Image 1 (tube, helix red, strand yellow):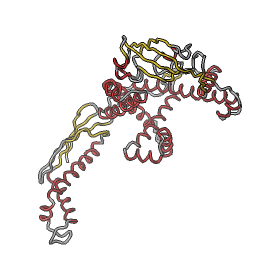
Image 2: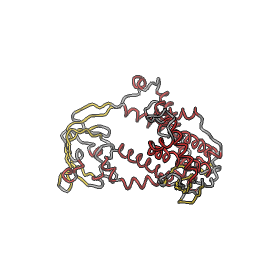
Image 3: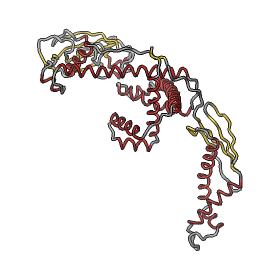
Length: 431
């Protein structure tokens, strides 16, 4: 077998593999012997039929077997000799093996990049000093009380911030009903019996603040400008006038911090509640500070490392990132039609993120290899268990799923990458 190699692009090689005629003859003979051994031909005992009879009866099957077995065999042998670190087979020429003739075929592969690692100690990192204040603790307690708030329907009371108003409303744009102008505004253009919170979280922008001070039976004209990032794309930037009438009011009452309330939160005293909240906020602050350090190190690594990456790997990552972006937008209210319209924008964002992700992966794993970091089976099992909790799956089922789709190795890679990242944080130059 003769193998020649040539560059075919960034991180890409084309191998030309030549198999001599005598090797093809040997492979055909070996295949024929296997068929003779198991062939069932009338008039002959199993394994005793003459070679030419078996060759004639199973000619098509022998040719197909030879075609499917020989080319991959010699490709893998050529790969071992070349010592290339292949990440993907990009292309392979289709050739027909003919008896007694040599075979030549090309295989184009993407390979891991070769590059110089950046200096990964004394990376300059700015550390933000964060302290949990009494004000933050109180804000958290207020938030918890708001989550446990009760709403009571009342009469003869104006809506205050945090209360709820039941509305009947109809919107127009330049005198034309909003839903006639923009059919996608269904439910937003008009409605009856809708409860709206008197705060900034109302589903119609600005409506929550606009109803503060109104009482049952009050009517009001509200001007609304939909933001550019509104979930219904067709309404982005649209100016509408809403004619609103309040039909009912619910007053929000917050629970007192008493024994009943503390019991619901499974704490004994207000002091214990404040202490627990402070601890949680401190952990959050530490995690946020660590995340900021990670971000700075990641940006440093990408900026300081010059490397080209395999195109096929970037394409694979781009598909994954596109799915993530689309899924995130749909969770925020975007429809499938809107996602389709945003496809070009999503693709561009995904390509940029994918390129950086792939670069960072090679850099991080390169550093992990230099530091001789490994991922133990225990660590892999622990990570899968954590993933299973997030995905609400059984850990063993998730592991089996990952084994079947060849993604289990990515767990070990992530563990090694994280170890390298932790090392760089510990050895960073804090400013």
